[in-house]
Amino acid sequence: MISNSSIQVKIGNLRLGSGLPLIVQSMTNTDTANIPATLQQVRQLVLSGCQMIRLTVPSLREVECLRQIKEALRSEGIDNPLIADVHFNPKVAEECAKIVEKVRVNPGNYVDKRNFQQLDLTDTEYQESLEKMALRAKPLLQICKEHGTAIRIGTNHGSLCDRIVSRYGNTPLAMAMSAMEWVHICQQYDFHNVVLSMKSSNAQTMVEATRLLADKMQAEGTVFPLHLGVTEAGAGDEGRVKSAVGIGALLLAGIGNTIRVSLTEPPENEIPFAQLLTTVPNEKQNVNVQVENGILHLTYHQEDYYTWMATVAAMAGFEHFTRPIKDLIIDNQYFTKDQNQRLADMILQACRVKFSQTEFISCPSCGRTQYDIQSVLQMVKERFAGYPNLKIGVMGCIVNGPGEMADADFGIVGATHGKVSVYLGKQRVTPPLPVDEALRIMESLIQLKIKN
Image (cartoon, rainbow, N blue to C red; front, side, top):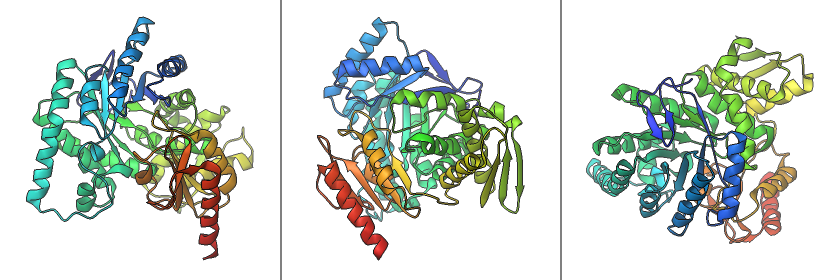
């Protein structure tokens, strides 16, 4: 029962807020227009214990599909709240708000744009931009109020608009200020059924931005519920550890009301580990913590591998973001020395203290992804894992892809119909290509970088 929120938010048959249990959620990765496939995935998520389910709605075409999906689920007795994930098009968000229990909008691309350009706005011009955004958001807020629909203001580090970045830098502060602009817009129109999130593939950025946002809301006397997640966390143990470092650190600080572990795997795989993270605040009493000369020593004799991983990574994240560490020693009698060291290495990498392998940033994918990102990520990891000083992104589409991996050395981003484009930093360097050809080009670019 973790929360520092002062407002309770109703989302269908669930509530978020102070004194209420943490809610676990996930997102489908099917094409929402493929109604049978999406229904089957929602059913699987529900069986796995997922409490809220998000679906992408990229255009008005999928809005009617969303309606049919909801009607089919309700006829089956499945009443889990549904969330529409909307980017760019306010009209889509407005139509979705008439159907589902919650709409997620990204302030970074709902009105403003991200072209990686410096904008030198005067205070007057900046205020005029805010007023324009408020007017454009007004119809959505009115519809949400009429239909009892909640809104998640989902700020992504990779899709902050140029206006915000130009004033505050590409920083956690910029993320918090972007969210607070929308908080004030919602308050202006007397709308309070609001949840907020600060997402980044960098766990430290996510933690700092969320803490800043919580502090700013606290200072103003109104704290809305917070959704926690490290976006583009990856897959396998590395993805789980990165999620635990960020989400767990905040849960241990008493921050957070709903969580998602974003993995480039089948969505139902996210649920068991997310459920483990909800137990971390109660499990911390079983962990012995010592810090000496910047070296964190965690002793936790736990037989279950994933409980051990979730708890230790969360504790390490909390300690590191409270007082930065320079090394980590883990002691668990039920696992070998090499296993203890491997977990320590993954945590140190997630905390960006020490890099022992290539860092991979990969999104969990959604209905906008038009290639098999799960298998391609595995190919990329097998081919490029031995470069500890490199960061490589594997992204589903252009919505958040180029932004979230903007500080990556190389990346591939889904284009269309099974093809991907190669990126050098945040610049696209190839047209859409078959995956094999794109990987060959990326390997050539990596070799060229290493030689130079």
